[in-house]
Image (tube, rainbow, N blue to C red):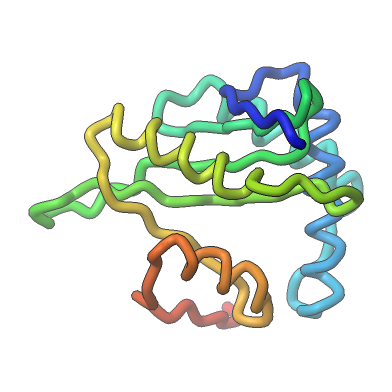
Length: 156
């Protein structure tokens, strides 16, 4: 039986979390040639996420199984000026350890992020999911999400 808990990330988590991110990023790059990993990709990711840890508009939440981090979710406040509900919670990324199964870890992360958003007066979330990622799409739909917007890619 797993012993899941969630908490906000800290700088000491970044080396392990960047490895979890990297494994997912490699798979995404294999699925879509437009996505290419930069040299020193993990270090670049850690640098950006370290800044997010100090940003009041961003939450980086870690899920642990028996005290060991096995995934994370990143959410940020998305402002929609002029709309009645002018703040949404945007899920930037959710990644889980691809080398072991941690049942319920994804849902635990979403619930922790939902709570963080609620504490910031936000009761709606949006998430981008790669069109070729049927598993991620099914996960988000199982939580009640519905199709909202089409994202397009264009060279500039």
